[in-house]
Amino acid sequence: MKNKINKPNNHGQAIVETAFLIILISAICFAALQICIFVVNDIICNEASFASARVAIISTKVSSSQIQKDAENTALKILTWFFSTNNMMYKETTLWDKKPLGWQIPVGNNENILSYTTNIKYDTKIMFSSLLNPFHNFTFFSGGNPLLERSARARLIRSPNRDFYNKAYPEAESFNE
Image 1 (cartoon, rainbow, N blue to C red):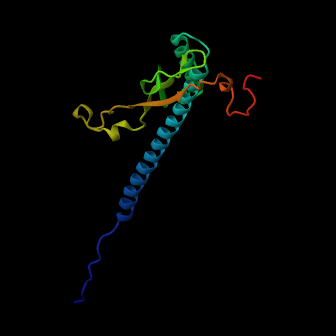
Image 2 (image 1 turned 90 degrees about the vertical axis):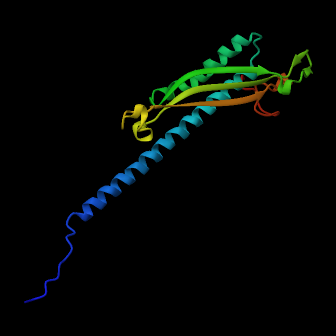
Image 3 (image 1 turned 180 degrees about the vertical axis):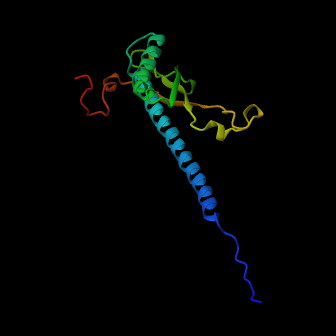
């Protein structure tokens, strides 16, 4: 009688291991893609917030409601193209003007130096929210919360020298020429 050597039955092991790796690598790729979308949304909204604050500090209008409206229109003009990508939803733009640190610093024509802060609120869509929050309402893969609330802020201080409102640096040409 010959000794039989029992070989382990490995049929299909490679397929199972490959399936696990494909799932893991896909999850990593989608997570990296989602992070990139968050970063791009933040960069665009921070730029829009900065531009809105810039419009507020160079404004010659006296009414704070008109300055608020100009700041909001600037944010909308910058973000309008970006809304078409359908991964971000704009909520609102707010503008605060206040004296820096509460100090009243009069300059040339009895104006105070003001600090303008813009805040843009927006929602970023989460691609696979059910995977990030699978236990929403205690049912697995219910959909979770598909939105992440975000905001972008910028603060600029109005220069007391009106000659430089339309210039990037002291020796620059005027923007309006």
